[in-house]
Amino acid sequence: MTEFIHSQNSFANGEIAPEFYLTKNISGLSRLENMDVMSGGGVTRRFGIVDVATLDGYARIFSCDMSEQEHYILVFTNEKITIFSNDTIVDTIASPWGDAALPNLQFAGRGNSVIFTHPDVPPHILTKDSNGFVLGKFNFFDMSGLYSKIPLIKYDDMRGVSFTVTSGPYGVKSATFTASSNYWTPTNVETFVCFNNQLWQITEYVSPTVVNATSPIEYTLPVSPITDWLESAFDYRHGWPRAITFHQDRLVFGGTHSVPGGIWMSHVGQHYNFDVGTGLDDEAIVITLLSKERQQICYLISSDKLQILTSSGEWAISNQPLTPSDINIKQHTSVGTVASRCLIPQKIENETVFISGNLKDIRKLSLDTLGEKYNADDLCAFAKHLINNPVDICYNKSTKHFFVVNSDGNMAVLTYDAGLGISAWARYSAYAKFISVAESGGETFVVLEYMGTYKLARFSDTAQNDSGTHEIPCMIAGVPMNFSGHRPRHLRLRKINLRLWQTRGAFINDMRVELPNEIYSPGSPGFSGDISMNFLGSQIDPSIAPWTIYGAESGPITVLSVTVYGQYEI
Image (cartoon, rainbow, N blue to C red):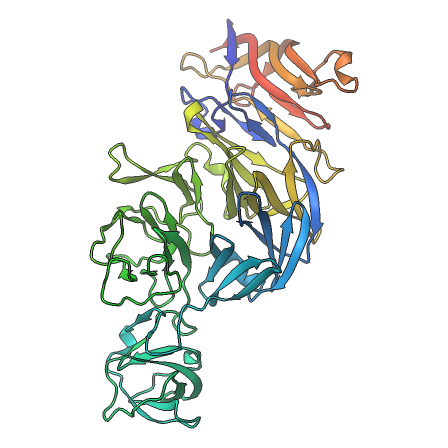
């Protein structure tokens, strides 16, 4: 038998998958549950959860910051938005999005307004004034004259189709369009059509060849059929933009059903104006991604460059400033992101973190040392077993936590601090299922579901349990031990030394850690120092964790290091 002393003074890699247990230079654990890795490498019990409000049903939450002092949580339930500030409801408004639409909702904020997009619903804008919040359709068109601000496009299925224009049934500003073949559908109602420099809105569907339309001005009947015409880029027939951002003071939309690789950028400083005009530097820009693969634009991210995340790869437009005559766009990586639901990429330390299309990788989009090419490194390479069909994500800059809500109701949580070498995954569980997550004002809010009841709640550094009554079982377990490249056949533990900090209770290998009685007095922060546990030669299976520390009672628990003394036989 060979004597050994094995110390672990850092847990900076958090929980790692079994295939990495024997990898050198990884400060990992076989289990890290309801505990966070601290900046110094130790681990501490996660914050408790406090309830904020009971909700109507299934919900998705977003944060909305109207100013440095005004932080709101928007709770989206079935066709309703409930707006919270400081745990208090400040407004409730109707919305056009039902339960089924919520997973694909995106947004971008500027000043005191937020614009929401969904591939099947027209964009809406939420604004705040002295009277409260107002939600309405985003009107990016002008029907006051010949000048049009709405994005227009020539679709492939328009080719070979012409239509004649005759007087309409509703006065001098109405007309009837009769197509040369079946083209119109009921979804064309509200669509805009432009020909001969005049804008029309279809107001009535009559048949596959006939629709009625109106114009803001009187018109002269064309003497011949219309063969050259444009339609709305966004409508019920062809879909609405999926992605949205603001970049270089332009409002940018991306990806519809009919033009999945399309990108539409407004005039500079005129976010309602998408008229391409004559191509002046500040006028609107329309481009389409071209590649061998179908590129469904999923997200647009404004960074040092305009990042374009699609179902097949990651693109960027690097021009500064960006003008219609100078567009440098290229594909940098070919990972692809999630298109089935919206998991809005998060900015972490100036890098864009997103969920890959396989729903298993957490990718970090960052520039190389020359600042020319993006790489998409995997942030969860050592802990893919913790990622299980993500349904929501968010990042809290204050706590340096990246939250991933899994479909099973648990969360995978990454503590990430590149400067200190911390990239640690842990699993969060609670008495209830986690449904959605968002950060606002430095605090992390969640939607919880328990026995059919949904609640809005938040993590609190002063809460020692969840929802006032539920304990927070936490666990940290070491990896199976390997010595000098060998796998020991037998392992005997003689003693384990723990270095604790402000801890009020813990178990190790099912034995209660005896702490001084004075730490249980009111006002005591808990025990800080070294504690030894003697195991008197207890035999441990070398293929399992040699030690497991857990806490099931209210109170803080922080582990800074673990040292194991024993013997092994090869």
